[in-house]
Length: 214
Image (tube, rainbow, N blue to C red; front, side, top):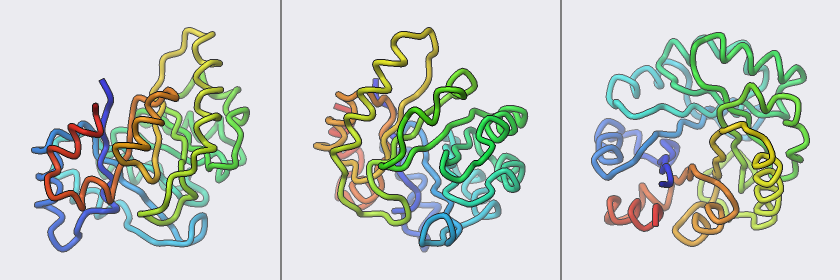
């Protein structure tokens, strides 16, 4: 069954507690937290303190996506704030193996994200240490962007490579995900779908989650 992870980036921060509860009651499996620093991506979101507040208001699995430079300096703070998994960008980590193992040493799951133009070959020496690979299906930095279909081939290629090994991990798609693009990502091999605007702007979130899962 597909795992559905609403992106907190699309929630209303005026009513965040209510939106978190709505996502949980609507059938969401995880919550996806996009952390942006204004350097690695051209946007700012929030830091560990807000994540700690989110943690207090939900029991859902917290999937924390660090779209930041030098993520190794902040891993401990986000784990302390309540992250269940930390995902870093391959493009932001000159010593990716070291950073992944720093995450694992904190006792949480580790993921690596790839921008649309980044090859999956960048992962081949860290796959044994990973729990998740995140395929960005938009260029990171802003919500509400259009899905990039070319990424589907990358997902398919990586899925075939993974099937030749005994390694089990989550493949996640993030960016422009709705019921139509979500189906394409799932058919390509992703078992986790991150969706922001499509879910939080839906008139009926339970129905939107059900449609996305189908």
